[in-house]
Amino acid sequence: MVELTALTIEQLAQQTGMSVRNIRAHQSRGLLPPPDVRGRTGYYGAEHAARLQLIQEMQADGFNLAAIQHLLARPGRAGEELLGFKRALMTPFETEQAEIIDEAELLERFPGGNDESPAALRERAERLGLIRSLGDGRIEVPSPRLLHAGEQMIALGVPLEAGIKLVEDLRKPAAAAARQFVQLYFDSVWHPFERAGFPEDGWPAIREALDRLRPLATEVLRSVFEQTMTQATEQAFGREAEKLRKRGGKRR
Image 1 (cartoon, rainbow, N blue to C red):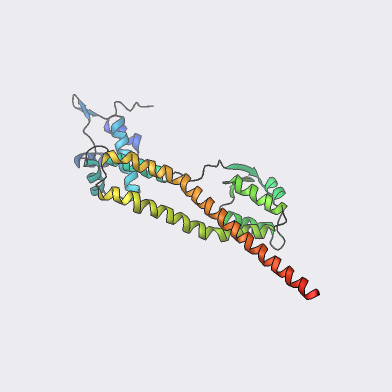
Image 2: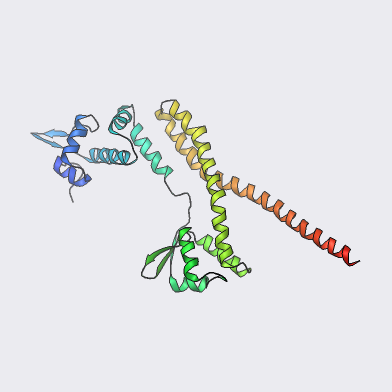
């Protein structure tokens, strides 16, 4: 493998998947530092490869070359920091490790519903992202906790159809809550940072705020849900108690 400390422009192109022509164009625009010239040959290193990767990723995110040039021309490492922030932002929120099971185990744990065929239920589960078919009889379970909760609900007597419908119904309010937390972050943290001109010394706080938001959002939702669940349970049992009281009154 070619070392990244002394690449010709052709080797750099091969290493990064970018054409020699585009590399020269980026260099002429000031997007890429000049190479180390030895004799009549320019040599590129790891810094150049990393810069080209940054440019490629920013283009994939919708930045045009003028915007990329503006960011990279700023003092410090604004472009690299922005890319690092984007990567952190796109890191999956969930911390669970997916599991792989086979179809036989899935059918054993979830034999089917009362009104729908196993095939129909499986299609709904895949559409919701509860399971993902990998082929060759293998099934990926993105959230083993959620699948285990489904098993426990079935053990309580809840039909499989009802459990899947519950997940379907919860998706919309969960998505709305997620959007609110994300909007809160951008309104309260990101946009003020943007208006300040992306000061270099502010990036650590921006990243820290994002990292702290993840567990905070979970805690807030959990606390609100627990309070709401208590109220809903009390109200439901209150209605049932009232019905029993009325029945008892009629019998007299």
